[in-house]
Image (tube, rainbow, N blue to C red; front, side, top):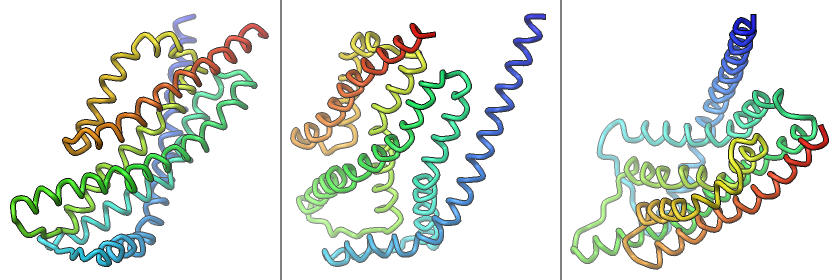
Length: 246
């Protein structure tokens, strides 16, 4: 009988998860349509800004223009649907939380979205220009003419900007998992050296091979981890207080 109850509970959880995933997909489709509507002015904004700096874009394949439209539409769609996706994830885990925990964790959604935008902004305004300048200097040293392909340029940009936005959500993810009891501050402190090593490797990998660039990216990532530890301690204390009151 107990096994049957566990089986029914598992089935109900899977059904709930399926429903949440379907809602996320449907909302993303709507956001994707909006993304296609916004893509043209967004692309023109970036291209006009670069044309003012003397950059001329080229199309090397017939499908390049369509590829750029699709990439920006998906990037805009992901950005617009992120808060809704986070809300659906919260709704999925909310039944297992106390009333106080539900009130506390609902605030993770706007904070996660804000951190995502901060990460994207940091990558676009600080990291990406450093990478472009470094690569342009190499081209000048080689004495070659720089010819920008629009698909290649924006693919390179989005591959840096979007992942960095996701990385900046580390503090919110850590706090959320701490409130759920999945991770603890002690665990984060225990793996601190390993985390530093991984973060520095990430920073060195995505930046030009020069010390200043590595430092400018490594420091924010390490600070994010330290902030995550401090927030995890606060979240752990609140979780412990909530368990004692039950």
